[in-house]
Length: 405
Image 1 (cartoon, rainbow, N blue to C red):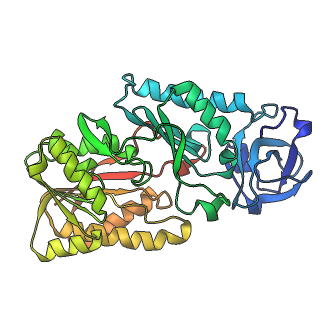
Image 2: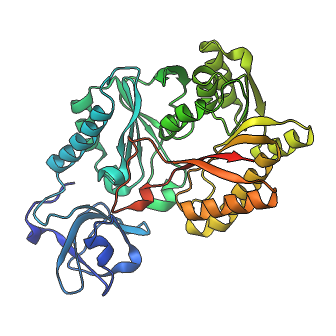
Image 3: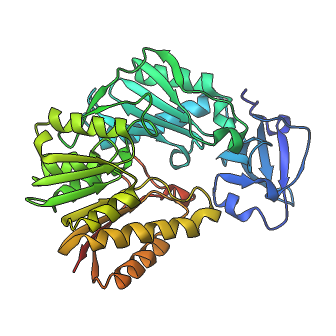
C-alpha cells in the first residue's frame, strides 16, 4: 500500500528528545520506546515520516505497532515515496552487486541476492538456488508489500519458482502470520543440486534449515580446506556437510567425522559425500554436539582439526550470558580432543555475541585447558552477505581459524 510522494499526505511520527541521532545516522530500526506522538492515526503497514522532537525530517519508514521495532526506515529523502519504483531500485542495486560478485551467474549458482538491512530492505531475505528463489519475510513492513516485491523479482530474474520460508518466532516478533509454501511458478525439486567451490551439494530448500544451506560460510569452508590435507577432521554441527565436503574434496582430508542432531541432514551429508566420490572417508554421528564431544573425549579419540559451527545460541541480549557458557563448553571440549598443533575452527552466528566477547570466551577456554591458542585468521560472512555500516547488527558471523599448541 504505497503512500503518495507529497510529505504533506503522509503521517508524521515524532521522536522523543535525544532519540533521533541513530536514525539521522541511518540506523533502520526505530524501537517503540523512542516514539513520542503521531500527527494522525496510522495502521500497521502504513508509510510514515519520522521527525525529531523539533520537527526536523529524519527518514521515511513503515509502521508496525505490533512489533518492538515500531518503524523500519528505508529512505532518508523526504520526497521519495516508498512506492513500487522505490522497491524496484533497491532490488536492482542488490542484484547488481551479486552479478558483479559472481560473473558466472549460471543455474548452478547459489548466493544471497538480498540481505535485509544490508541491502536497504529491512525484513526481506532472498536466496537464489539456481533457477529458484527462496525468500524470507521477517517484517510486517515488507510482508504487507509481498505482492509488489514478488512481481518485481519475477520480472527481474525470471525464476522457475519462488518459495517462501518462514522464520521461527516471526508471529510473536512482528504480529505476522506466514506459512511456508509456493509463492509462484514451480516448487523447487527435492533435492535441488548446486555447486559450491567445485563441490556438488544436494539440498532440501523446502524443509531444510533457513533456506536450505548456509551460504554465508561459502568462503570460510573453502579456506578451512587449505589446512586439512591428510588430516583427521571433526565437523561438529555439520548440517548437510558444507565444511565436511570442502575438507574432503578440496582439502584432501584423510577422514571426516561429521556430527549433527538432524537425521535428515546427516543423510544428505552422506549422500553428498557419495555424489562427490568421497563417501568412504565420511563417518556421520547423530548426536547432540555437547554430548558428542564429551563421548569422543571419553573414548580417547583425537583429531587434527575440529570445526565448531553451532546454530545461533543467543536470539536476544538476554541470552548472551547463556550463549557464552555454551560456546565456552564447546570450545573447551574441542580442545580436549585436538592434537597438539591442531587447528580449531570456531564459529558463531549469534549477532548479539560480539567479536570481543567471543574472543574473550576463547581465551578463557584455552586457559582452562592449558592450551596456547593462536588466531591465524579472523573471518566473517561471504561478500554476498555485506555489512551495512549504519547497522552493524548485519555483521553477525564470526569464524576464527586457530592453532592450538
